[in-house]
Amino acid sequence: MRILFTNDDGVCAPGLLALVSAFSRAGHTAFVCAPDRERSAVGHGVSMRILHAKPVDMPGATRAWAVDGLPADCASLGLYLCRDVGVDMVVSGINRGMNQGGACVYSGTVAAALEASMCGFQGLAVSLCVRQPGGEREADYATAARVALRVAGWMPDHPLPRGVAYNLNVPPLPYEQLRGIVPARLAPVYLVDPKYEESQDEQGRGFLYANGEGQPPYDPDYDTVRTGQGYATLTKLTWDMRLNADDAELGKIDL
Image: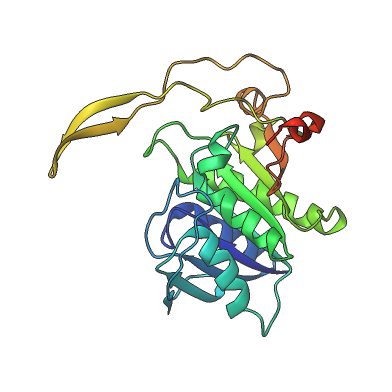
């Protein structure tokens, strides 16, 4: 397959390099269009300005560009830049840290996969559930890359509608210790009260976001629960943020 890779951790991130290496060794043609710097937690933002794509060398990639834009920019621009050869799917990641539950709202990794799906291509977001920056190991990325390779090979026979993408989260375990790949619901993490800590930087005193109090209720099908049990989780995500419920009462508001 011809696969476009992107991410939100930047074009030099080890998770992206691990993906490109694994897929190219497996015989896939790899293209890369990724941010020129870290763009984590930017959500599904896009740049309303001229974007600059700088060609870069990357082992295993047929073509690669570093872009001064956001992850969603990189997904759509990469598809445009590869229009002469065609792309079969877009894989975003491997993200340094989980993209589960409410974190998907903030995730640039997820946004890039959704942007690809909104453009009419199959999209897969891949994340490694490490807790602390610097706590990752190369073996962990290699495991997540192998799982992503399995999922990507399965996807052509299980295509999603336009605007729907797959979200894969892999626990930081050796491949042989994984218990399997399972579907999972989004856990209600990040649904918490606002909390900030006063801090100091070169611009003076300010406020640093701190995850608020609140323990999400336990459900055996939550993605956070399943990765904690040693499973990789796969969830379908969509651009459609409408609550799928009866909204007849919305038409009863008088002017």
